[in-house]
Length: 117
Image 1 (cartoon, rainbow, N blue to C red):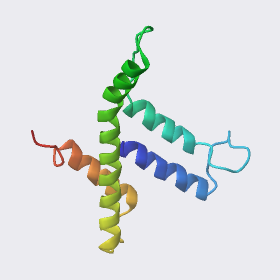
Image 2 (cartoon, rainbow, N blue to C red):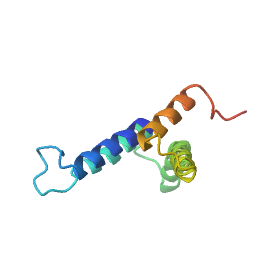
Image 3 (cartoon, rainbow, N blue to C red):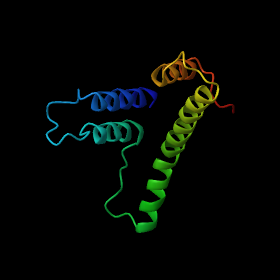
């Protein structure tokens, strides 16, 4: 998720500087929906529902499959937002938002934010 947020920053910057993809014909940020779609495709699980499942069973299967993924996404966005806000509030002009996100990704990779049992 952090990588996708970093990619979104790059896309936003490219649009602002006029370096967006050639496929963009109306001057708008056509790549932005692709970032959201990529995030959802990577984060959300596929769900198999039996053909004879009742509406209640479908709801339970969807809730069981999506619950952990949505928790992870909300936690990740909250952590990213908080990290960026702290850097901003501390007046950190020596580091870009992308660098803050990259530092965060390294901390996550090292297990800094692992939840306990």
